[in-house]
Image (cartoon, rainbow, N blue to C red; front, side, top):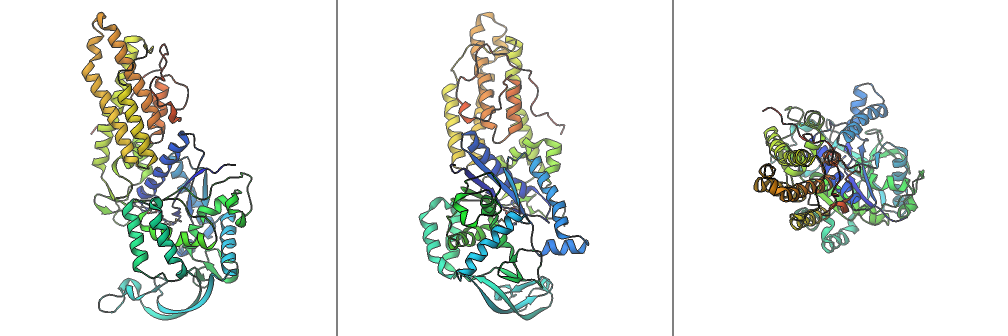
Length: 515
Ligand code: MSP
């Protein structure tokens, strides 16, 4: 059993509404997973839900619901979004599943037995309203605490702590000597800056039952549940451990029969706000448990809507499902990847979305495929002419560029390369004017060449686009009369379209919408 390429996303809080930000991250991971599979690499893609914590407990209680039943209902909505986005995730982890809870308990037991987790009495300022301890950093300049915390009192509480202090230096050394561990580079520098300028405090990993009961009970003290981050981060390993991963055999849980070899993860795709948890706490947890670290954290920025933070209260949340229902899943997948590079923050505007749809999808890609195949149908009865290599060198160069961008997880740049081929081919139609060639019987051989080059570029576009726009890619293949799915990247090689082959029926890929 050889190790698979293993890619994960953050697991979303079940009680929030699925929005553009969550959907974006999942599409990023899906494109990377599909690309690796299309290169013949055995790949495993995991996403899921973070279901424990105070908010779920409170909302379920306010609704008079059992928290598990409440989570189950919300989980349907989230899994529905995954399906709408046409994600190819191989599993869906929920932190309330037995396989996950057993793993968390096994790790906690080991760390506790080894003295890496200890109990301590803590005295601090506590906000009853927000149910959280505050620190000096939370004070306003005048020394008071912000009004949002309500009444703040001194409180003593016992909790369990995970020793972090001894881990600081090796982690700094590791990140410095492993350049690809956090990408992009500026996020890596952010983590190094944090680690070099702050002394790590031991991490509180429990909550007393009196304050929180919707969580995983500590295996060594039933009066406490596990604090959400220790619980949530473990999902990346709990699922493989339950599926028989040999690296995680010390923590094997109620195994299913898949016999997977996944750990360490090759890529955790996460947002910038949860970088510290993934780049500091998670590696330390793994090291303490004597497990290998993930190979890469790929950190994306945040989407805004019309220059403002998306929030339910201002009503400016972009609902991916609505966009997909109106414009199609590929239009959504295309826009988010084309518009925003992995790293910086992005801004969604409906105008920007429509402009890209119309210029790049309908007029760019759609127009190219439609006119190329319609002309082949009209002038050659849909039969592919003899092989021509007029545009093969240029196309092969773009194929190579697209691959190397994808290998570096530069998804936006990869789409940029693919669109340079579309632009080039549309120019070629204008320059060679096949509609004029068709009027002159002496130009029949030239028209054959032009039509071959255009049809072959359409086929190659189907292959290159598959990780990004899977439906469109399949649609191009079926219009070309090709029965296979364009999911093999090796097929992006000039000359795949056989002379004499009869294509299918051309139809617009992206219907133009009235303004
Ligand atoms: N449950 C934790 C993650 C635990 S991972 C072990 C969490 N959940 S979340 O629902 O708040 O966020 C899930 C992911 O969505 C995070 O990676 C977060 O950065 C991302 N996004 C949430 N809002 C976003 C935007 N507005 N834009 C882009 N991504 C955003 O954090």
